[in-house]
Length: 291
Image (cartoon, rainbow, N blue to C red; front, side):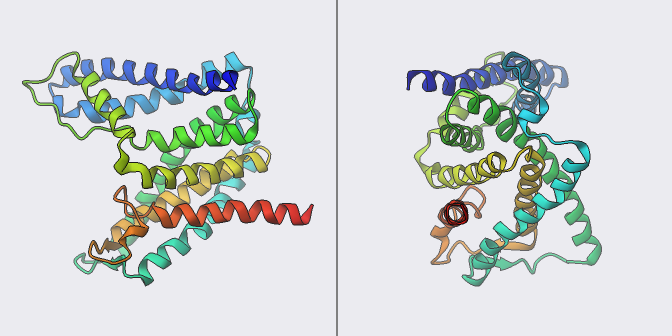
């Protein structure tokens, strides 16, 4: 148990190193730009870049190759992307249908919708969703899951990697740094607030939902050999639907069913948690019956 605990803490140490480095670099960049207000976003983006770059030394240290991370040969990988996207559509679309039927989501009639505008939003959202999916899946279902799986049981690796995945979504601060309060330690002040936000009880519902999201993707990754392309496609499909839903619909904050979603993005919440948990359980029940 102590060994597993030690391995589970290593990603936290890497995260602390990445965020601390990002704080220092972001301060220098913001200082050069003479724009303290950019500090928060700079820290976020640089942290993501540093975590992505950390994959390469981690692979060398753990003696992992790209197949261990889940990357398949290019032709297979390119086929997996649309297949995964389809999985994302099939698994999350029912949630949006329920949100619409229950009146939680209502059509935004204030926008002058045209075919061109919808097409533009669709393409831009798709590209951004794919970028987000590539970064997050390479880190969490790629390097992190592979590293943990090498040193502990698969179930433990899935839960721990999914917990890190969920937690990182709340590693954020809302404070804007003014010129008067801009100094070398400003980034670390924001970082302290960000870590405190991870432990905010108000985020519990969203955290559990994102934990289920991470677990679903991790199960997909561990059940299909070299399937990171499927995970990227599925993740992109989910993010794309969430972004398009946010563009086309508004949330009715007075709905009696609002408890089914959380304030994180008014999509993830108890409904998604239950739905994806049932999907995971159903898969293993089906697998056991077929065995």
